[in-house]
Image 1 (tube, rainbow, N blue to C red):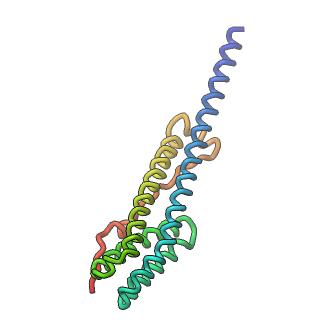
Image 2 (tube, one colour):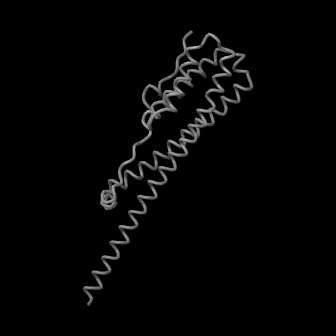
Image 3 (cartoon, helix red, strand yellow):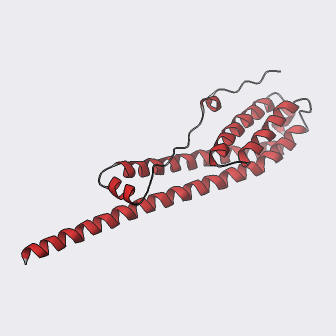
Length: 182
């Protein structure tokens, strides 16, 4: 009789541990999906600001068509495609925007334009939000990856097909200083 009670107790404890581990994996995955959705919303806001910024700069820099075209092209690349292509496009858009702001440094009238300053401030704030959203997602990805690879939750993860999450990173070319040559 005592042996049956002990066996039942062990089974109950294992079921509770399994359910707890499963629920923890589901919560982490759902938070990561939510973080990606928030990041996507920030990126959409940035995509909406870019044409306004380009239009503002166009009036002051008529002969800088290549820089403006690069920003517009980078925006299109960031909007189209799957998640991987959009990630690379976002990095290209960030680099193009840095070039645009470096270009603006050469035009004192543009730097003093209230519309440009407002758009630049909004974009700066948005870039901070995007950076924080990426950091939050990467923290959740690290948590999920730890759970997927650590014992005993790795047993539950493999049983229910949970997998590692990719980190969001910035390619080396987007980390380089922007130089504008006239």
